[in-house]
Image (tube, rainbow, N blue to C red; front, side, top):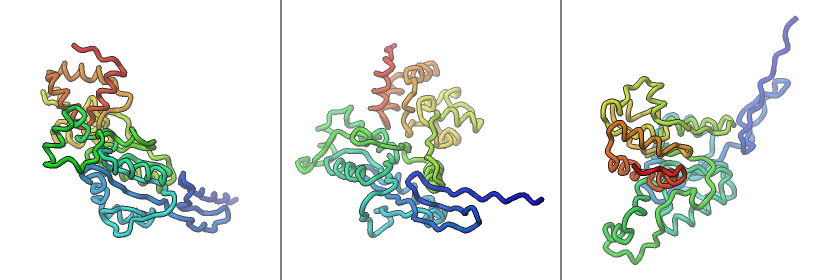
Length: 287
């Protein structure tokens, strides 16, 4: 006796968008609509969204599976009405205009994604908080009267963020996996392990063992250990994991012969504010 053929299950995204499917009797269901995606930017270098466009041919394959309603670097018309399924925001909040735009996008987004280390940790802009702020502004501008500046901060300090893709810029492979999850209707996953783990998977020789200043033990991976794989120490551009035992990591770097001042400089560069928070949370003891 011939076995009954099992029908393929329908696939829906979390925002209710039918992607594909075959009904119980073999009839093909019609696509309802594509997920709406917007790519927006506040203060930063725009390199994070540029890294999305560097997906090139792959991006073209994805373009007919999502509706990109805003991408100011590549689109002429970027106005959209109503809710957007996913809004990717790059950059940090550095002025009043940034904050106004960010709050508007939060209202429009079902899911807000912090794209890049400016958005997730404040990146180099946040170093201003560790300096004399007025002197920093005068160094950059002859006249500062026109500035409506705020203390540079990551976007989660102002609005709820649903997903964070750190990196300067974020690794293209991780962006691609994230977008594929959206299309397939899966909850997007973000890598939550240290760079060191990726080095182990790739069987890289440990750069710390070679006497190099590598921040891998403190830094979130997701980049497939891109820098250490070409013998360049990790500079920490992804920032730390939220549950990182930062004091233990610092002690490890000290044991490997890295100067305390050098460790502080490396941590301050991309995510100084977050490192300071982590040290207070676990009450690091000065040695």
